[in-house]
Amino acid sequence: MRCDLYKRATSTVFGEGRVTAAMVLVGEEPGDQEDKQGRPFVGPAGRVLDRALRDSNIDRADVYLTNAVKHFKWTARGKRRIHQRPNTTEIKACRFWLDAELGVIRPQLLLLLGAVAGEAVFGSRFRVGEHKGKVEEAAVGPWRGLVVSTIHPSAVLRGDDPEARERSYAGLVADLVTAREACRNGS
Image 1 (cartoon, rainbow, N blue to C red):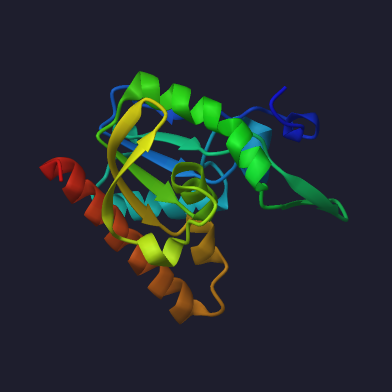
Image 2 (image 1 turned 60 degrees about the vertical axis):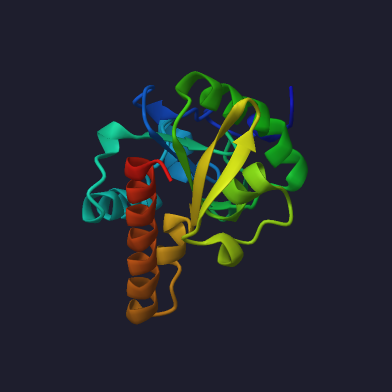
């Protein structure tokens, strides 16, 4: 095995969606609901993403959704399973799977959702704030193409107050529109 995260996970959560997609959305890691259902972006952050996709005129059926890490890393807090950030070794161990997905799909553009997704593509020095909303070029294994980085939808849920959550959400939608336009224009 490439890492030990599978030992506590319920499911391996691979990507899903259109295998001929021009755009691949790469999240960080599955959450509690994703681990239980074995599908990406089906929990609370997935609902935020679905709304943001609709508001940016991107059809979820037209994209491919995956995560940089394929197993849920968590710690118990009472009866709840609380998300833990995967470490660099775990992110690198799962890079094999991301490379394989991108090798099959060969998208025009990756939309990186959050710091872990950014680290999987750009390395451990990646910071969302430095890359957010920019159209960049990158190489992931055999794949080369355009990349747009943004916050993870869960960041919207963690906002301190309604105004902060709405600002985060508006930024997420704006970055999705940037990705959609870059994908459409090829630059």
